[in-house]
Image 1: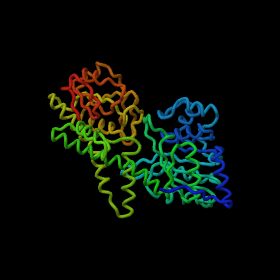
Image 2: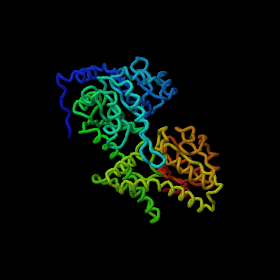
Image 3: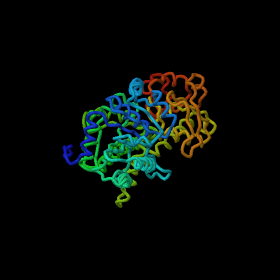
Image 4: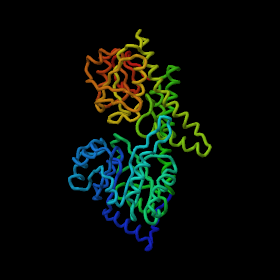
Length: 451
């Protein structure tokens, strides 16, 4: 394990001054991107007295922060109100204020292109903007998930255009976000933080910053090691989810209940971690991060076949769900074409308002292409807006007995906790359950088809 050593000497005047500011909570922190990562981070820094400026190109989002109007579920309303009303957090669309900051943290999206290659354009744009205002005594950290080498090969050369030397005049590090939306146990504060600096001095300063607000900070030898750590974490989950999804499709042919098998295997007290099957993978990490690694691996003439196969399986499972719906309708002497399909839940996981990369969106599109008439209910997602190349636009409808009864099939794609699944099954004609949400429903089980 890497340890952080006090390598700053009396000659490192700029570094020493910045570290002292950080330790006294006097350093002004700029956070670029006020989404699921940036806003919780900004609030945590403000809670301990750091002056924070939040930067975003979305004027509506900036206005909501300044009005202390919370839009992120993982941020407590009272926490946002306190830091805003006390003046510890202010948001702006004016990026020239980066010149005021001692620390700049980049928390922007890193999606995939249509060909599933990394899109780091937001990182580039943010860095190019920072360069305009970079001055001695600034720490720049990147938190956006990306492929190994981004900090050193992309960000550093751009920053060096300012004519300053890394590790002496300015400082650079990578510390990946580990946000898990909706997790009630682990928050920004109590989730261990990995950090890698471009130089030992960079690491020392970045470590000093993060340890002020995060319980456990884990230093690693380089930004690339930190970048790969984050990608590995989510690739690990993607691969294991793919394995259980593939087993689910096998169990379907064998007539075995995959949920029973997974739960039974999970009783072993060692040697196994439980992963559950489902309609696909969603969110801002698991569907994306493995492709960052496979793309980078090709630069080294290496093909991550295992990871790529996992990605294929996790895409294939959405088609499997559609086929399961077709088969379920066939058993009722109905066809998918012109059937009324009522989708229950479109968020990528339960009890959150996030539908980024949600498999529900893909499944809805596939069902519509085969002629199904789709309505949906999700207490967290009132509207599905057109996205990417999709023109899909739907509004959530109330979960009434009449809507349930009128549907030829109800498809549970997200298992939100506040839904009465016994009532759903009782009123529906047919239920296709992709999340085992009906596990505890005792009556009318003949209506339930599990994936």
